[in-house]
Every structure is written in C-alpha cells, then in structure tokens.
Length: 357
Figure: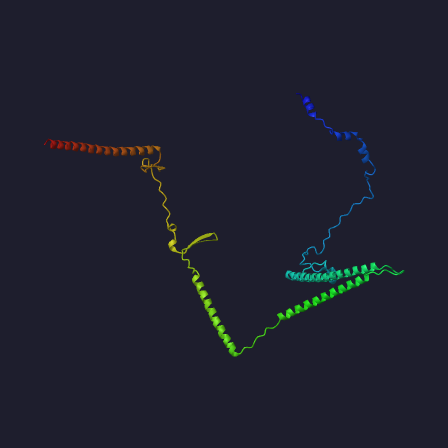
C-alpha cells in the first residue's frame, strides 16, 4: 500500500449523527463578530485616565502588647482594667501571676456560678407551679365570662389580665422569699459547721494518782514496743549480706599528659615479660665451601651456602655420606645372613646324626 492509501484509510471513520456538530456551528458564526465586540469604545484603554487611582498600601502597625501571653490564666479582668486605667490594655504587663492563685480564683467563680444556677432553677420551678395554678384560674374566669349574655352599652368586657398579673407577681414574690429563706438557712448551717469545727477540746484534769497509773501503762507499752523494734532490727541484721573487702589484685591503667602508666596492686602478678631481655640478633653465617656470606641454608644438613654451585657440592657430599652408610649396613646384613646359614647347616648335621643313631 502507498502512503496516500494509508492516509485515506486512517481518515475513514464510522458514521455518527453528532459528528462535527460543534465545528459546523463555528463555521456558521460570523468571523468578524469577535472583532466588533472587542473594538467597542468601552474596552479601549486611554493613555491618561483621570479617574484611575492606585490604592496606597497601609503600613503594618504592631500593638504594644504584641508580646503578651493570651492565655486565660494571664489575662486580667477587662472590666476592672477599663475602670481603673483605660490605657492599661496598651501597656505591657510585667507582673508575675501565680498559676495556683489563678486556678483557685477560677474554682471559686465556678462554684458561685453553680450556686446561682441552682437558685435560678428553684425559682423557675416555683414560678412554673404558680403559673399553672394561675392558668387554671384564668380558664375558669374565661368560662364564667363566656356564660354572661348581656354587656351594657358603653361598658367594657371584663378581662382576667389584671388577675393573672396579680397572681404572677404573688408567685414571683413567694419564689424570691423562698430563695432568700433558703440562702439564710444555708448560711446558718455553714456557720454551725464552722462552730463545730472550731470547738475547743475539753481536757479533763487528772489527779496525781491517775497520772501515775497512766504513766505506768505507757511505760509498759513503750517497753513492749521497744522490744519488738529491737527484734525486728536483729532480724534485719541477720538477713543483711555483709560485704567483704575485695582483696583481688588489681591492675589499673592511667593516661595523662601523653604518658601511660600501669599500676599493679600485687607484685606477684607483675608479668615476667616486662623483665625479659631482648633476644640476641641471629649472626649471619658463612658459606662452608666458598667462604662468602651465606644467603641460604640447606635444610637437611643445616649448612649455609652462598650460591647454586655450593648447594650442588653440599648435595653431592650428603649423597656420598648416605651411600657409605647404606654400604656399611649392607655389609653387616650380609655377614649376619652368612652366619645364620652356617648355623643352620650345623644344626641340620646334628639332627641327622641323632636320627641315624
């Protein structure tokens, strides 16, 4: 296939109803519409625009109390601060505040708030009970008013608003009275508790005989307790492990000022290597054949030699000496064998003579 055929095959796509829909819409639009829109005088920029102003950047202003802590324990009461000194917020506080004291004040405030809530709850309960009674009475009043048939001309219809107001006011007054009585009662109870706590302890005056008897009892008790304590201490001493002195010889190493020192607590552990003399340097041997300084040593004879010729001569001498040794051994063996043969022959003759006789 040629390149043109490949391009044609690539461009052939399956049919679809929505294909090139947006492209057709763009082709239908007027190409000069955008230019007409953006060339309006509204969008044109002027070289000297009198109404255009650049906003000035405001400088960052830092308050004087920027470094102050913002925790609840260190913030003073804002209302008292404003009353005493209006400029107190601007000044930096350098006063030490005890956190324990602040916590105690917080606890006191919480207690007071809880007591107020309790009082308000009691007043509300009393108020609701009175309101319910008032509502019942209002309903009864409304029923009686509905039963009335004729209202005089120029007269006004009676309403129970005044009665309900009076009842509500009476209920609130009763609730306040009860709250005041409850407060007074709680204050009295607290005062009684304080009196009981601060009540002095009455000490009975004892006679001399009673004091002597009590002294005898205390003496006996003290002697018994002392004996018990002594027994406990003796048990502790018996159980206690007695530490023995460490008499093991110790070697200590010190390094100071570039000097290293070793200390031995016992001279018996002083190592002999420190008193050892240095080994003598090995003397360089002389070749046994050439007389030159030896460089090597023949391993079998342990004779030093200087070069290869000397080694060969030493080797030949060694082999000769070995041959002589073996020759001597062979001669000795041959002599022994001959003696044994002669002895056998003599023994055989003797045996023959015995048999013949």
